[in-house]
Amino acid sequence: MSSNRPSKKKGSGRSMTLAIVLFLLSWMLAPPTQRYFAQRAQINAVKAEVSASNQALTEAARQLELWKDPEYIKTQARERLHFILPGERQYIVTDSTEPQVMMTTAVAKDLPSGLPWYNRLIASITEVGAK
Image (tube, rainbow, N blue to C red; front, side):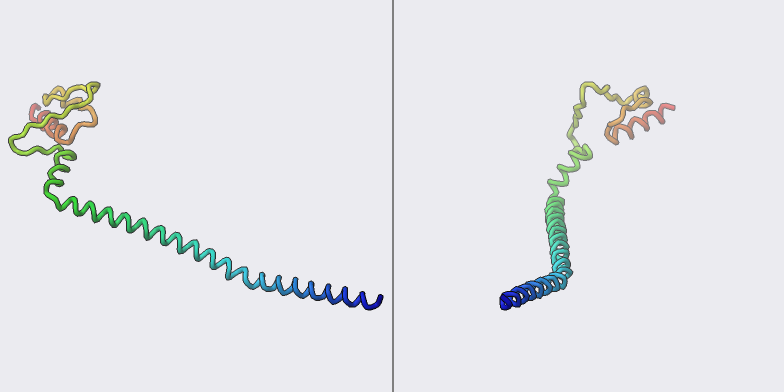
């Protein structure tokens, strides 16, 4: 009977030693493991930022190539600024709910918003010239 008691203590001591070793090991490895995962998250964030920057750079290079083409510039000037070539006549169709814009003094005093810049310019010149 006395031989059974020391074996229980040996088993208990071994499990206690193993628990202490495992605790110390996890206590020592926790900070480096936490830093590792934090750094991995930072690396992934930087990679995503670099990828987004590369996509923006690719799009900017594509736009630059488009603007080197004289036909593209002409098309953009026609669409954005309503430019026309000499000898052409331009018609701008507006929504039927908006009043028609005529270049007279009476209309120039009450300009609806949303007119192209050149209509505002001509209307203001007409109004000043009439005074």
